[in-house]
Length: 233
Length: 319
Image (cartoon, rainbow over all chains, first blue to last red; front, side):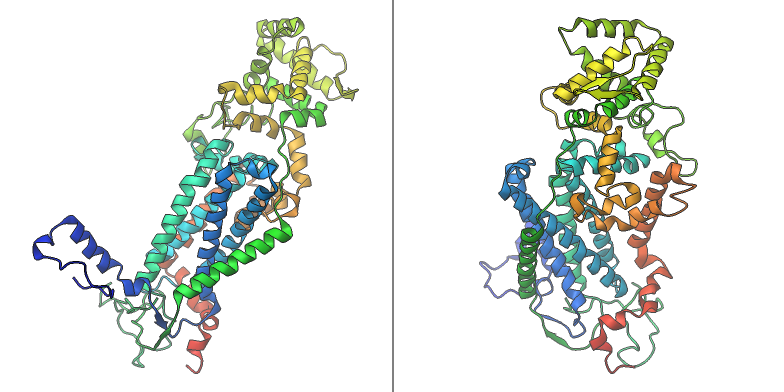
């Protein structure tokens, strides 16, 4: 087995252990997620634009959303109506959500205009789009979980659209308990899992290179090539 | 990908053979997190967050007894928004929005049964004890034929349109509305005392996290609609993008909200606008999802040449 970490192995792997499930899984993991691609310290020279920062900003805002949401969950959904501390934590949650979507939308359009799906990166693009959709669901159920007039208004308005496509039968926006569960359990789990998958794909596939005016050799492209782009991040 | 497939600049790239430079991702992520966290703290300290109190049946009926009584009689006689809604709440012939010939809501059927007449009016009144006049009115109403009930309800609807509130009491002009006057009068009293909130919310037991019935009742009122419009939350005010007290709401829904504002969704398609807007948005979402695979659509970035701005350092000096 070849790995790139510097720590000496605790033991020498023996050939007779190679068929153990654990050994097979480890080999597959190291092959699929090589550490130098997961946490690279060099990037291609073309990676030089302010637009690249919006992926990291989106991830950072998501982290703040989860931290502030967890703080709100500690005291329950009605706490923030009764406590000034709770109200401030709710404000942190609201503004982190607003920033999260702001950064994510810029990130999305940036990647669109870079045609970031090129070079076997279709799945990276698709997981990004699904994460965006799951986030919209998380945002909606968050507004429905506020237990105030805004929740009532959004619930009674949103029901018509969701009912119109038949989804209201099992996704009842008027049912506070159901919406709270979706908001604090199901959708955060989905958003985080999709984000992790998205980031792993970004790391393994690398950042898409610019459109080429001509091939690196100076001639026109005749054939497509399998692009895995070395350790580009 | 096949080595022999013709190179498509909107799908393929060549392996990068140019230079690499040091790039500290861990530092970038850490700095980003600190900056975002500080920005969130500053925004929260400066602007806070809105918290407009919820509307209860009690607060609504105390604020506007006539509107409450008007809504209540519509629930009883089956003309309210909820009573005429159809699936998923009840069976109403001809209800249910369609996309072309297909009504998805009707295909799914009634999954959350709501009978406004029973759930909002008769059943809560049945829980009241020690009021002989109410018990008698209930017995008379239940024993009457549907045609007789409809006559009383129509008469009360006409009368309540001229109702007034005197000394915090609903005063409805006299009319041939039989026991319905007592029923709606008592229901209004229940509502103003707060007993109706408890009765509807706790109808399925002590604990409840499901406010479907209370919300549908309140949503049938003119009171909630007026309050929403005053907060700029109505559908024709780009409601979804706005929050209460002029805070930002869900601006990321701008495209979804847009279609409600423009023809034909706002005009000739308005009867099925929800279903059609959702269907249209699903198509647009599918296009966004599959854009890497759709010839023409995936070429837009290359045609737009915005990438020249993004990678301007890379293209500097290149032809």
